[in-house]
Amino acid sequence: MTDEGSSLRCAGVDAMNECQIICVGTTPPQILASLVGPLRTALRVSSEVGSLALPEEDYAFNKERNQYHASAILRRIQTTRDLQAQFALAVTSVDLFEPDTPHVFGEADRTARVALMSIARFGTEFNSLSHRNASEAVHLVGHLIGLAYCEDPRCAMFVATTVAELDKRSASLCTSCRSELQKLRPQAT
Image 1 (tube, rainbow, N blue to C red):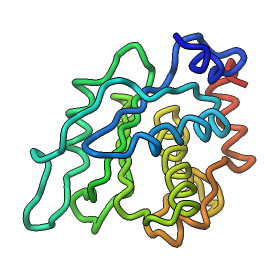
Image 2 (image 1 turned 45 degrees about the vertical axis):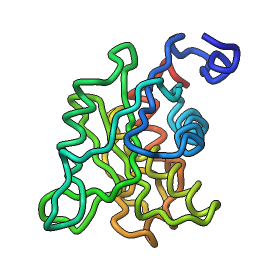
Image 3 (image 1 turned 120 degrees about the vertical axis):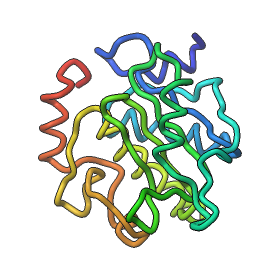
């Protein structure tokens, strides 16, 4: 473990990294690295970008929709993730969907403790992209920890279905969700 990696751990949290961040396809490495801080700040989750990188998601491509099926990619992540980490967050740059939805920004599977996030609809302007990435990563890993959806549109646990909602949503938790996090992870605070 490097000194840099150990500096990312929170007091009271197990020495291993709790969340493995996985590159899927051609996601830029700087985007993956930018998620470590928001996960630590909002959820007190130590994380690092893993050495595992998954290839393009051709197996999940739907020609009729010109999108990729999120659940199919999640199943692949489940079988390839590092089991040393409690959670895995995979990040892709392809557009995702689930049946009966026009698109999804991400999908989380609490049972398998894996989540998938797409940056395809987040734009290219640095500040907006950075905020959207952080907000969605915190939202998805929050679900992996056990947090439910929140009705406060400014809370990271609010379900955002449009970019405008994503921009209003914070990368941090509201008071109610912070209280719930304390109950779920008392050792991490």
